[in-house]
Image 1 (cartoon, rainbow, N blue to C red):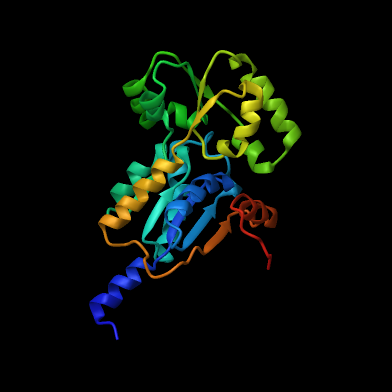
Image 2 (image 1 turned 60 degrees about the vertical axis):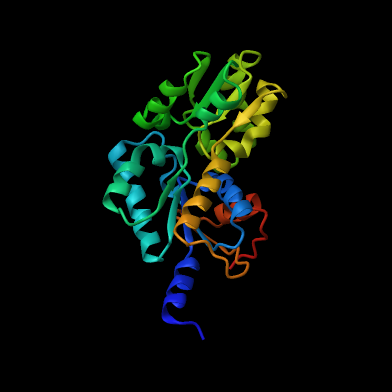
Length: 267
């Protein structure tokens, strides 16, 4: 028999981790988290009914994020991961202030990684308009600017990835990225949707392009924070992933589990 304090600690450890994005793109973040934290239970919220976030006003983004956070709080999540660069840039400061007891772990464009590993090389930062214009990103950019960096607002790209139209995607990438072929050596994938098309981006820019995204570092940071607070689930293997999509479209669920390499059995 466990005593009361042991049971309370166990209950805390076994609570799920909530992860959300404006669509299914945040699965790239979840994949990295599961590699490092395979014993946890996850709830993934895809807000594809309101995708993309990158073109929305700050107040609307904050409202959308807060509504999702309230759902996660209702499901007793022990941590909330913001797997959307735009939401991270626009809403995390507000959310941390309003919900100080909640653990928020937020993705951000991996521009510092370029500074650490490829400082002298020309770099392209691909992100949404909302991310590139945000105060959070601009502080990061100016701190680590190598003065060989191009900032590209990829308006509509997350939507194309979300919808899975390969022909339109190919046309978009050729038109938008063609100018940078032979000009850049690094690409920062500043939206969690973009790693899903890393191969296609490489086909346009060249096979020797180095890609940077912040998913792995976020996963490590999440583990460190949970470990510090004795919230890691050490009670056997879980790995359960619940998927919620605000549009209610089954094809979103099917694509999500396919990207996650989990067999989707349907209802």
